[in-house]
Image (cartoon, rainbow, N blue to C red; front, side, top):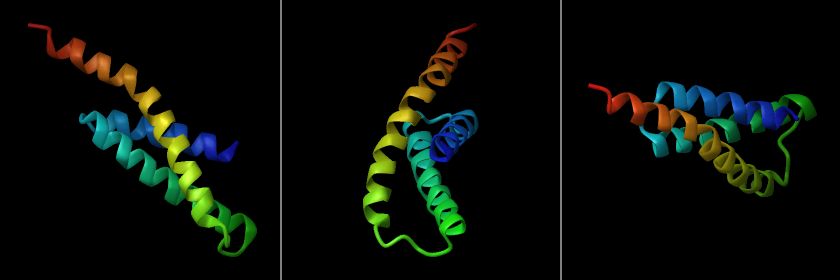
Length: 84
């Protein structure tokens, strides 16, 4: 649940702040992965020995979430750019 909240917040933040769609996706994925690993370290108290597996799975899921979250931002920007 915490990872989903982290992914949603970073995706919304990056897509709101960054006007380039794919740059916002990459920034969101990197931020999500780092924040999730920090949350795990704080929660468990040590560095997870299987962090590479968690990192790769989380990166794929975070990319999917960020791609979906970014669609309304992308459409809104395209709509606003066509206005006179």
